[in-house]
Every structure is written in C-alpha cells, then in structure tokens.
Length: 331
Ligand code: ATP
Ligand code: SF4
Image (cartoon, rainbow, N blue to C red):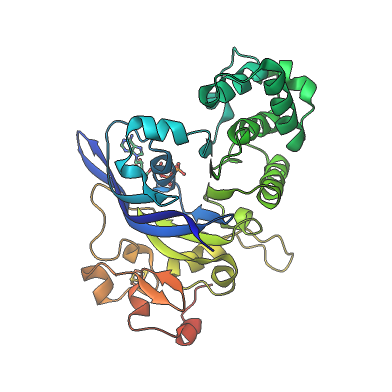
C-alpha cells in the first residue's frame, strides 16, 4: 500500500517566556492510502500538536522542523498559498468542540457554501445545495436542517455537522482531534460509528487523535502511542492490542475500564506526565515505569524495530524476536 503521509523526524517546540516546551520530539511514522491511524496518549503528550502540524496551523510561538510528506511533497517547505489550496479540499480537520469551529451566527447552509466557494468560487447555488444535502444525509442528518443555525442542534448533531463540513470536498486525509471528548458516552459511540462508516465508504485516510485507546480499537488500522512528545510505540492495531510491547502501552491497555462483574477494580497509571520544559533524564517514562533500570535513567532509548513494530524502550535492545518479552508485562 503506498503512503499518503510520511512524517520524518518531526520536532515542534513552543517558545514561551519561562522556557521552551518540546511538544513533539523526533516523531516519524507513515500512513497508507485509505488507512486509519489512532494517535493515543494522555493529555499534554503532543497529539494535537502533531494534528495541527499536519495542516500547518500551529500557533505563532511554535517552531517546527522535520519533514511531512503529503502525497510525496514536503508540507513543511510549502508556501502559504500551497498549504491553503490543500486545507479543506485535500486535508481536513475535525476539532474537539464544534462551537469553536462553526460560526454561531451563520446558517449551516452558508457555512457549507463558504467552504465550497473557497476552493470552487464559480459553483452554482443549486449545485451547492445538492452537495450540502448529500453530505448531511450521508452522516444521518435531514437536509432540511441546512436552514438551521449551530445552536439549534444538540452536541452530537453539531459534531456531525462539523464532520459533514470537513468531508464536503471529499478530502483524501481527515484529521479528527478528540472528536467525541465533549459528548456523553452514547453519543460518543454514535459519532465513532459515523467515522467508521466514512472509513468504509470513502477513499479517505484518517488520523484519529484520542486519549482513549479502547474507543478507537475498532476503527483504526495502525496505532501510535505518544508519551511526553515521543512516539513510544507504533504498529498494527491488532498486534498492539494482542501484545503491547512498551510498558506505557501495556499500562494504557490495563487502564481501560472493565465492567465485568469479576473485575471492577479501576486501574490507572500512577504519577503524572512530566513537565515538558524540564523532562526527566534518559527515558522520560522512567519515573513511572515498573521496569526502569540504570540505563533508563541515563540514556534516551532509541526506537527499536521489533518484528515490524517500532518501540522506544531499552527493554528491546537487540531484540528481533519479541517472544522473550511476553513475561515483561504489566497488570
Ligand atoms: P490534549 O489532549 O490536552 O489536547 P495533547 O496530547 O493534544 O493534549 P498538545 O495540546 O499537543 O497535547 O500539547 C503538548 C504540550 O504543548 C503541552 O505541554 C501543552 O501545554 C503545550 N502547548 C500546547 N500549545 C501551546 C502553546 N501555544 N504555547 C505553549 N505551550 C503549548
Ligand atoms: Fe521503562 Fe526503561 Fe523502557 Fe523507559 S526505557 S519504558 S524506563 S524500561
């Protein structure tokens, strides 16, 4: 499968008065055509920063380096005009809170028209109504709602409208940043179903950013686990769920709430994400890791390739066959 996206050694630093924050640190990964990637990790680990980098809409105090190849062209080097021609048409994004992206004083219809006309200025109104109606129908909203304002929709419906707006021009890459965070559990699952249906119907690759490893399991093909700006594990979803290699991934998996009667203990990862202005020496996860040894405190682990999986952890030094590590598991 050819890659639509290839991120190579991506670094993003936020420059602040009290020091620089290394939000993304040497991250590399690739995504094939029609593949879906789940970027997972605790709040503050740099997931959204990667999402914003993929659209080049980082805040003004961000400094970016590395390469982001979209369909073979490095976006980091693209001019503002080139990037603008991609946004919305080729690459689109859904944000956590639809109210920050939808204009509260504009009918949904006009927001759809604005998006279409930004790329195809000569489109006739009848054509825009047809396209907007079809996209609304595809995500389960009656086209008559085109006349409504955002405040006339429930939270879940608003998020659907956001999704419709993001896919109206059939982008090749959709980035969804915590698309269900502000919704209740039932609506969360409905939105995930919408995204799953899109993945099956459309010729689209997707990057799904979330802190909930359980929520994305059924949708994604690949998973990238982020910790304190590092991509600590990357691989196929099935292999990661069946046999997580990095201790942080293992802990994330045992932290997924389990409602079985025999197991009602709520597990969580002890300790907090480090301060990214002055992260711990060596492996940034060492203060929370049950397997930390001397080398972990002193040296930053490189990323090892273990049977096609990428793992940033000293436990896998010299490993080609990960069978030995099955006993090194948490939980
Ligand atoms: P969340 O799930 O809470 O959105 P995240 O994993 O997406 O978290 P980011 O939002 O990418 O993480 O933030 C990574 C780090 O960069 C955090 O420490 C955050 O405080 C910091 N950060 C984000 N934006 C800025 C900014 N504009 N200026 C300074 N620091 C920032
Ligand atoms: Fe734990 Fe060491 Fe691996 Fe870091 S490098 S995750 S501290 S075992």
